[in-house]
Length: 338
Image 1 (cartoon, one colour):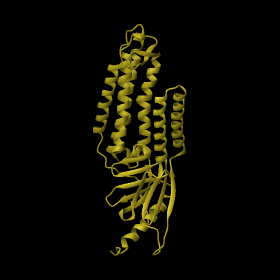
Image 2 (image 1 turned 180 degrees about the horizontal axis):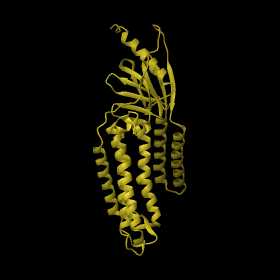
Image 3 (image 1 turned 90 degrees about the horizontal axis):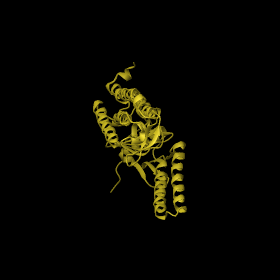
Image 4 (image 1 turned 90 degrees about the vertical axis):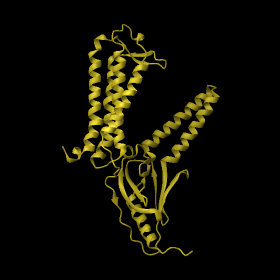
């Protein structure tokens, strides 16, 4: 194994996010298969809001769900976070994602196994008892597994891998310059957000046609709020000039920035939004505010108090170099006369 996989952080992440879920899921599936001759055919696979069975199918349905939730989701979480962890990235978010993986696996293992067990010996799955105890046990197991997975991993100090510190551009005394770019969310995400808003709009129209006026007004308001939120968080105009760096939403609000007098450092690093910030959009993590619209190149500006502004934008190296040039000039200028 490589040196990267031998570090306690990486090793314990693998144990929590991959090994433990695999063990729980294999044991759960083995138990369910061992009971196959004691089950009705078909078995109950879904329970309604009152706790009564209302959906039926073969045991294979439960086994597939157990495999997807217990193995597939942890594998997906590990695939999006482990590569960064092995390259040296650190932070509480990685620890949380591993705990989430084992928690989801425990939920799936207990819930699916319990619902199969409660049908053993039944002649007809319609007589299956309430699923509520299984739900309580499943979420309880998820909480215990998640907390245990969190505590089992060592504490991680946030580290941004591969941060390249920019070299200030050479500006002549009094020379003016400006750098501008538009940072936008990746097209697949914009399409997904459009589909969500369109779906809400169609639901609103359907309610109006059906005469459900009160519900239609609620949906209309929800659609408008969601559309505004998406519009405010999917495209930003980024500017670097002698006053500092600013990032303004296409709607004009919100607006973020760092004044030139507050710039301590600037550089470029590749960002994985899911792994480092828990998602995309306007994100917060300890020590940093992120405008994370996609994975990849980002401008990272460090304030004098150590906090960072992170913006995923193209040509970030030029932006960082120009910003440092203006910061250097501002630090050498004599204070303005009163």
